[in-house]
Structure formats: structure tokens, C-alpha cells
Length: 77
Image 1 (tube, rainbow, N blue to C red):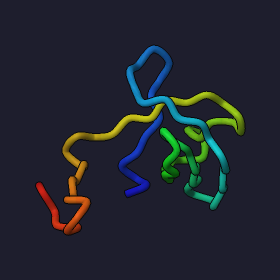
Image 2: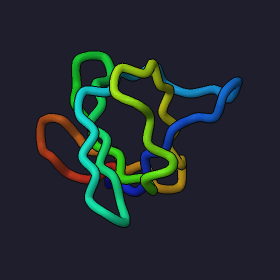
Image 3: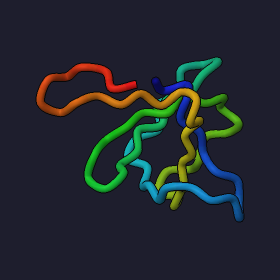
Image 4: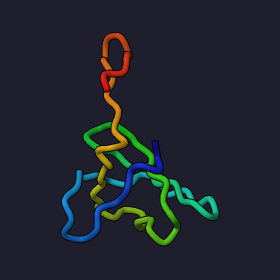
């Protein structure tokens, strides 16, 4: 879910991503990023959104990650 993807602070580990679109929505900002060719969306507070073109790293909360079987679509955990 977009609210579970966050941006790593400077020096913090994360997954390299490039931002494609920044969509301000008032209380939230949607940041569309590309990670290894796949597009994802992060929902962040406006003050936490990167600037267009910034190199960013994203982090996932392991408690919020869900895995699915590619063939069946069934949840693995």
C-alpha cells in the first residue's frame, strides 16, 4: 500500500528508485517511483516528498510486506 512505502533518510539503507511524478493532494502527496522497471506509489506528507528528479531510496516495513504466488495469485504469508 502506498502508505507503507517510505523514503530513506540520508545515509540510511534502502532500495534505489527514481521518481517519475509527484502528485500533491493537500494533506498527502503521492510520489510515483520506478524500481527496477516496476512502478510503485508512495503516499507521504508533503514535507517528506522529494523534488522531481531527485535520486531516492525507498524502504519497506517488513511487517507490512505481503508475498503472492505468481502463478496462482494466492497469498504466501
